[in-house]
Image (cartoon, rainbow, N blue to C red):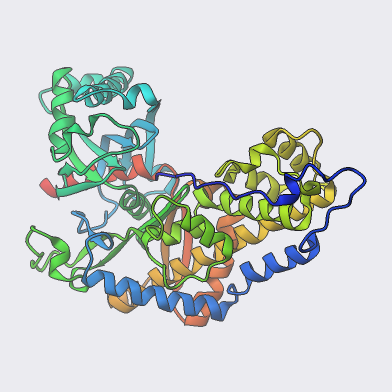
Length: 501
């Protein structure tokens, strides 16, 4: 996801006025205690169970509207079924993202113990840096093919298979916009993010990858293309049959959900034929969850500043409020205001803190996890990160940590409301959910925030339990779906091959 940098806030006059000397005590609009109380009130006021249930209702209404119309959200994929756990084999899987290429060999062993069902036999990660982004024309796809060749050369079983006439099946998790025309084909809609191979916009991704492998004499057959959220559903559903949706929460947010075909308007399927066979009852839907919630989520003045100075205001309202790419910026905006209006750091703005998006979620995680009475680890990190002459005082660091806590708590609350809205959508639209004999619904979770931010998933589960109990629905269980992109791509290939038998 593209994270852009808004213009910095204009410094308060106190931080620039040369007439202020050590003998003059500057006056401020408020106190640290009052500002902290205001921040806490603004961020936590809407986190009561009844408020989150009301928010969930608004999101459900918006979800249902977008299932009927709109080209950007609730997009049906070419995955109509979920894995049954009987798919077997070893498959080549690729994950192509904005900054990383990962190539893996994935073993599907059937629905045995979860640790053995789905395994990565071998994986290699390559950085997509500016040198790679600058590759022109077909050179980028040739680079991908080279990495595929390196993986196959490193694995004896794969090398032995290469000598046979039968091609090696491959799946790809593609994180860029694509107009998918079948499970194994789709036209590139653009890549952005500095990639110069975007000249091939409109070309078929399957052909580009396959031809690049053929130029290196790699006997590869691309059998499946999936996006990251669909891959998360497939990887978790292979292990747990109660899985019906998955969410990715890292820098951005997205989710995929398995819904009845009848819940979508015919127009959502575009030029392809609307599924009408008795066997095709459901479809995996890419929600583009980040784009929802503009009129549903309560906001603060710091959220409004972030949105107004974003290059794409209102484009991904949910993402701007709760995802990892923006949590740090919201905290930074509050700190800057505290410096100018309440005298944090004696009213002096550290230059590094004046740079938008210069406080990232990794730093927030350090502050949140710090339980030392004097917050010494946080003080040391903050001083180093923002080049302060002296570390913050314990009182200053305590204020910053309390801001971090309320921002992350709101993120968890809004995230949980979105998850509750999606699970409620399942209950409303899929009668089979109530009749399948399972006592819960599993949600696969992947991404740096949901899986790595201190306590995020656990706290979200506690709050989700409260919302589900109040709604009298089946329990909804958040389960980690780590490495979901490559695993899901592998499962998609296994499903495609099983369907051809």
